[in-house]
Image (cartoon, rainbow, N blue to C red; front, side, top):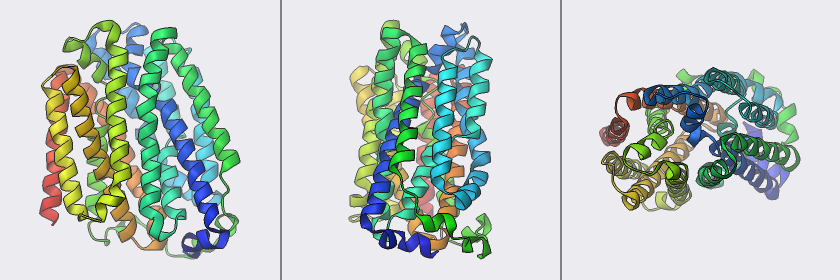
Length: 402
């Protein structure tokens, strides 16, 4: 639509850059707050009295998965409401709900209460993906790849900082204080969105979008390879989020001293997230020198190698190296797929297309911890073996597509 393509020129170039800056920083703060506690959820369940390792893995997997599962169902509803009232309202509401729920998690006394709060959180979650959609829709066409890269980089850098800060906080003050710290960070992101982001007036008042033909999944499937984009985003998210329920327990299984597990797990998460952020940032430059199919194939194969190394249970140095390889591959593959999808869909369909990509991503985010937890209850190493197989399947599918 006109408002999508001309918002930068109508409002002036500094406007979209300022808005992108506000969304990027708020995303960074929010993702830092989220990963301040989520990687250590297995240890929190142990703190709440769950002693069986398999039970801890299952509780962690279901609790980590239920939020994105609910959010995936709610994503189309939020997308339509966002089109009518503005994405800023949706993102602000999501962030504020995280403030309340994270604070409440600090005072739970039973595992089912964590699960219940995570389910409620899913009703208002998805701010990170909404921010990505806002960046892709509002930026000029020539800057779309960079805008996507910046927001995805923030989504990675937050998790790079969050686990190591959360691990240190948990070690010094206990896991409950880490939840309070996360609530404080989410409140900061909420204020930043309210104050720093200026939503274009014409996006709010232009009701002509209601009269245009409705963009549906069926209409998007005529775009070349859009169905494959959905499958690849789902698959990559399945692999990317599979470590959460099992990594602290796996580190203990392969001989990491119990007192060091939170810090070592945080460091491994941080290294992988930092490497993925570098991959997100590098993608725009890499696309100028290689085709997207080659990039996705190579990046998926690289990440598969990292997953195989993890499955071997190596020493600390090898784990860190594997985290670097894994993160780089995942980061490059993700941004390449989102960028190419955004370029190929018609301009008026871009927001809805990103909404469906968001649903695919959230579905993977929801299912991944559940599958990982169930696999981890049988064998921790099997999680990384299945990850490697999934990444190899993505590379093979892209090769067949070519």
